[in-house]
Image (cartoon, rainbow, N blue to C red):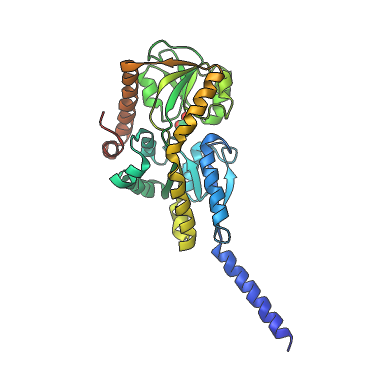
Length: 322
Ligand code: 173
């Protein structure tokens, strides 16, 4: 007689245990940028908040950065469901979705792009090309710059070899540079060996991988707006129940709302670069305006050339009249 209540209790316990584990889902997350460096930090805050608020509901296991997966492979891994959630920038996955590089050309905040159809236009392409949903842009208002080991006196890179990603290709070539694409993890060695005379990178983060040691000049003004975002595999998102989806979407909205604040961090790195002895080569006034205009013209020309179908529409939605 006494065995029944125990057996029933055991059954109940194991049943409720399996229900609990069926309700908690664990996603695999990967970053295209090194762990704990500037461009991974927003993703890491996202993971920490999901894991805190999603206890018993949803958790993210952080696989890591480029040590775990080459950064230019992350887009494919997300598309194929090898990972569920990724921190990446469009330039790193043009191999699966070439128009993603157009995010760098946005001159409107994400809040506006989510209203004016710009986000919706891209969302359709993420769905079609990448089986993905764009959750949150956590880097914005963060311009790119040219960093050099040799000085220039005018906006002319003739005779110089620069490290690039797709972000800078058209612009640097238009300025006369020879270009070589590398992942961020190869920049230090390329500088050290004199394989390159400089590189493109945003205003923040050059200290993360020690590049300040090899950098002598920064060219101002900056151009474009770096984009780093969190993407989720479409099938993964579809598999989530309402509570799980709510944790992900609420945390994404929380993170994207902070993206504009990236600009506050720009100033700190500008000061740090100065303290590290990096000399600013500045094109002032009309020269600076012409330099920036050329960046946008060549940038859009590159996107439109590669995607005559979507490039012009993206320009209408992303750009400001200039
Ligand atoms: O230079 C790069 O590797 C690059 O394209 C990029 C994009 C966004 C943030 C940081 C770097």
